[in-house]
Image (cartoon, rainbow over all chains, first blue to last red; front, side, top):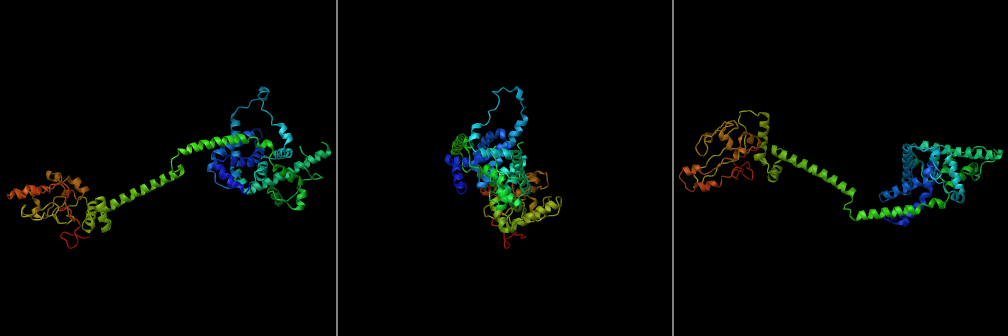
Length: 187
Length: 284
């Protein structure tokens, strides 16, 4: 958002729905893209939980745009971890016992087909990377956080984060190259 | 899946770390590296693409939640006391610290004033404010010395220095000759040593018994009271005009009754404190 961020944040903290909508529109797509990689099954639910948490703490937030994004993505990451813990405590239901009515609805395939196919494909590509590499790339590229902030979020050293990002990008290149080779050989 | 561009030979790009950092930072890498990293650059650009409609679908729900939260917080804010809770907690903790410090300072001052460790002006002020017995050079220091002597030699029979303010009732043509009170300078010790002959008798002419546990001792509050309060022995000794009545003065009773208060009077505690030029000034 740049220069508009400070005014938007202040207005949202003062109760302006328009300002909050501007903040939401700016951050939610990146948040969803991040969540679709690290928690694809519950991305929308976790995003909604994250925004509820953000709304409750909005008036107490102090910081700039980078701090705002760090807060948002840190909150989302914690929600993902909490959801994973809850899922681990819940007994899994075998698929054979589920009726078609119980099956979760598939993501909106029409939307995925019509909108931003390249973005969906890129998310799918990054999702093939190891978890840490994918998360580092998304936080650096999608969330726009710097190396130090990502390192704090993930509990790693900045050097480790940088190495993970480089490895992830190189592996992404390998995936693309192998796909090209497969296409060329017809396999 | 869309066909991201890749190198025609299908080899893995071997760009350096600097070039990868530039890619992550959304800046354009150098030209030679850009060609090599073109497929990865396309993927990252797709990740940064403008939001699609599906990614903005939850806005109405988020705004509704925001509206509800804001309304609740504003409603709660109207009845909220001032100052806000964080400031109130900070003020409360500061107030507790100040109260504790004041309590320590006052109690310390009281103890120092009681043992006479304060300078004369401060001792005087403590006397005025805290009603500490003993003030100035005439009372504070000897009281401290007596206190220390009692602590060091609790059963010593040696006479100890006492406040030497004059406590003689001034002679009056009505009441007759002055009657010496217990506590006159050098007149008594706590263990019954009396170095002034006239002091062995009280104003009724009876033999005063100042040994501990005797009835005469109980009148002035007993030894325990004297130990705690150096002035306690003055209390309970009353000038009730008996001696004057003995001399046949019918008005003596009324004159003397003014002095029957069990509390120390101005005659017992001269104020201001006796100076070096006053009788009974012991100095330090």
